Amino acid sequence: MRRLSRGRIAAVSCSLLLAWACTVLFALAVGSVRIPPERLIRLLAHHAFGSAAREDPLAAILFSIRLPRIFLSSLVGAALAVAGTAFQSLLRNPLADPFVLGVSTGASLGTILYSIFASSWGSMQAAAGLAYGRPIAAFFGAALLIAAVYFVAGRGSCSGEGSQRLLLAGIVLASFISSINVVLLTSTNQADLRGIFYWLIGDLSRPVDASIYVVTAVVLAGFLLLYLFSRSLNLISMGEEDAMILGVEVPRVKVSVYLIASLITGAVVSVSGPIAYIGLICPHLVRMMFGADNRILFPAVFLFGAIFTLLADTVARTALAPSELPVGVITALIGAPLFVYLTRRKGTL
Amino acid sequence: MSLSDSLPALKAQDVSFAYRKPVVRNLTLALMPGTVTGIIGPNGSGKTTVLRLLGGILRPASGNILLNGMRPLASLPRKEIARHIAMVPQSTGDGSQLTVLEFAMLGRSPHLSLFGFESARDEEIALAALEMAQLTCYLEARVSELSGGERQRLLLARALAQETKILLLDELTANIDINYQVELMRLVVRLTRERGLASLVVSHEIHLLASFSDRVALMSEGSIRCQGTVSEVITRENLNQLFGLDFEVRSPAGGLPEVMPVIEERRQS
Image 1 (cartoon, rainbow over the protein chains, first blue to last red):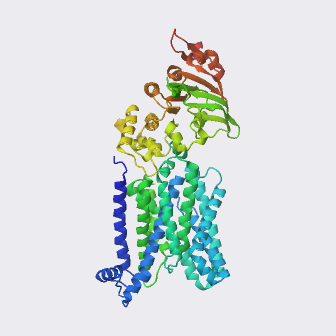
Image 2 (cartoon, rainbow over the protein chains, first blue to last red):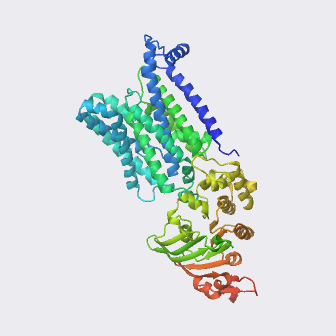
Image 3 (cartoon, rainbow over the protein chains, first blue to last red):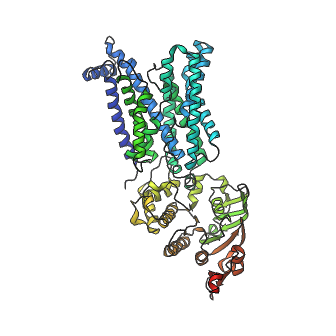
């Protein structure tokens, strides 16, 4: 048996980082305007060495449209996959993910309410506060919803068999809040029904604004903090009493992980809308590849989630080009059959 | 004899605990280094709750539990407690997908730093613990493939890998063949003597505890009815009161009492 070492984690992370870099190059090249590989490399080299060919129309597509979107999809995918891993370990339930638990929908509600209030304050203040306000509002939405899910599910629903009740409460509350979201959006912004519809499924086609810096900082800090809890989560996923016997401050770890996972979910949902299946599927696939130890699972799932979502978004923007699909449609079309396949494979869940 | 040998390794002082109704009342018990203490009691008497209180899993509603005679358990971080107290629970939890060696290595967790990984030495300690529990032939097997008795031994191995001075064992010998029961209890006694451990064994097996414990406490309805040496406590009257059943207790000259329940049907036939 191989003991888990830093070397193995580094090797797995480097391989996935390389795979992500290859996916980025692929995603940069394809789209409604295809960029040939040699042109792509030339443009990237020019950009890297500060001699960008500004007059080249492809440079604008590459650096103003595709690169920010690739960054956004990678960030959103990484965050949702990591949050899913954290919820699954914590609840000892393979079905737990930010979408099923309703955290994503709660974050959407926070984002929508913030947008409504911000627009009523006036465009200047709204633009200034957008960078910080929207992710924070999304986090409060996510945190409030998870509190409501706990309240509905009742005592003893935090782990093991009781977590089924928690998931059920999450599904029920998420469908309720989704309806409120639709009512709020259609009653306030009837001009952009298509945009609303796309955002509610999960969409990465909107232009990236200043809030991306806040979201990036939150996701990276959240990921690092969750990584600190990885061994404690390993023990908690075996049972809370066992974890206590082996020295884990279970209540403190649970509250911290819930808050951090809700925070990073809220942050990315504020820019992408609630995207399903990433937090559910990615942890399972990565666990099958590299084992269930969270110390290797967290970095691997962070990168794998980025690759998975980047590929899904590339399909979303190219499959029906020049039209685009919301990324949530593609993740569901890939994720649902994959999940059925995984559940039917004995012993994978 | 050093000062630490004369102080109780773990001491409960007038400890009470209740869920909805009182489960443990006015528990006073001292676990001494180099001593095996047994708790005997019928189902529902509060034995496991006592073990969880002494392991710091539950907080007493009143009273104190002191480590090394002076440090209140409630004031210590869990990791610190796990470096001093190892518990063997009744089941292996959800670790069935781990290999036997991985499971035993979990016992090293309290000794690792936040960014620490198990070292070769940690693996050596886990392997030595598995050898003591006679499980080295199953190192690569999944926990789910083990029998009930083997899992019990694996839990003991994990606790031994914690390298603590206090060992709390909950129904260690349940689901185990009689030969392994004796082997395991011999191992517990040997380690207790060699390493100066303070061991507490909670069990239904009166004859085992009578044979291997240095001190015994009888428990019913959340209270310790009596405690002392095996010869003082394991008497026909005490057991009769505890279980409502007649026992034959034979005490060979200079030896430990031998206990056998008296079953009327057999006597009449």
